[in-house]
Length: 349
Image 1 (cartoon, rainbow, N blue to C red):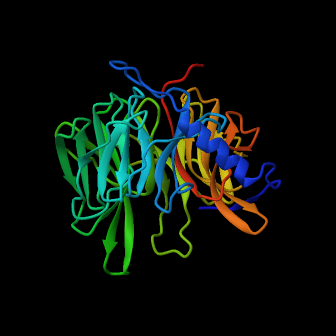
Image 2: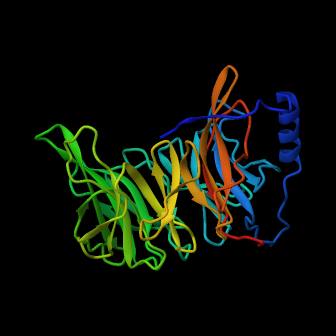
């Protein structure tokens, strides 16, 4: 979802911004021979600010010190930083699964196109494996490029929507769309699969699933009537292996995920992002508009894709709020589109 935000017109002219960006790229850090570069206190994102095709960039937490990490002729997108901060997994032309070091060096293909487009990759908690999907199958590959496991969808026409590793890395949580020929639509199911033997758990109706910090329960968007118009989405929680659910919201809501400390639940509400206690009480609106939210490891900052309205244009940018929902600010502001922010797990704070 995306809702425009009305903010003050830019203060600095475009040429000054481009000059600052060029200087930041020219002054990027280098890694000494034998030294391992680790992303720390950085946000990695995709952007078409310097090229018609998207590239991967990184920036400081305040939006300064922007560095271009990919410069090839392909579309590079959906960056995901490894838990140790050493590597970035991403998609190339939406068809190859790629990996590079945190400073943009040593770019290589982990998995070539598998008949369809790869979706945004995710890392296992130990940083040894990367999981992605081509829409119908799940691929788990080592960071060295060795294919570890292929997990098929429920049917050959299924569409896998999202993946999430459990905190201990032993299970993948899958949100999947399954064709319903009787009504020319897709049912939506949530299920988990073990990463050591591909054993599947029982599915429940829902989507946008994520784990609780301890990995003992699952948060997801639930609904009862697939054929309602519109579908009445709510936030539910269930045990990791069970099917009985606890409904946490009573109004249209979706895409829940826990704050890093596990005390609160963030979710998409009508017109923005809301946060509530883990029992569903005390809901509060934090943003007007936004999508693809990401928490800083220390929970002191939340970044997200936002739509910014300026005179004569509407643009995709990256915005942020503090960990208590205050201090909204733009981290990017340029004629190109910025999206899919991902934090480096390492923090100096």
